[in-house]
Image 1 (cartoon, rainbow, N blue to C red):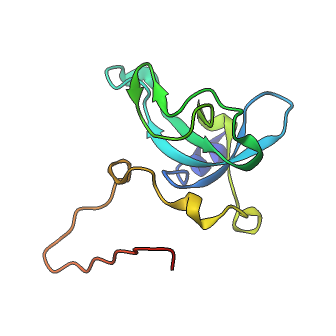
Image 2: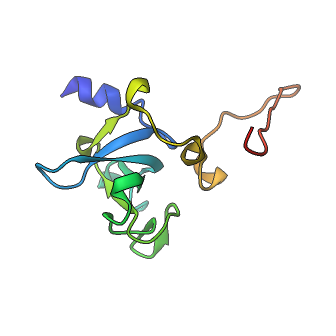
Length: 129
């Protein structure tokens, strides 16, 4: 549906989500670690989401972030999945109970940031607080 596609525009790397792994089963919490085509050479691949499963979802996945020999993101073995938009639901602020530690991107190269301009201010958070 159109509204679902519009919601998908807001799901990006580090977004907290709920993932439907199997039809009829509960949705597991996770963090988006990858967004894009699984096969770069094929423009018809579509957009997929690499999700690191958290909490009760850990161990329910099928990857460590690798797809066909290419590492697209990193997580523990069997704690990651690649899914299409129809299997994801963006967590709302009120049901986002995930630890802050999970929100940090695994690899800063995966985050698309706007280019810096001359005299731009940059803040870097180091440490827990």
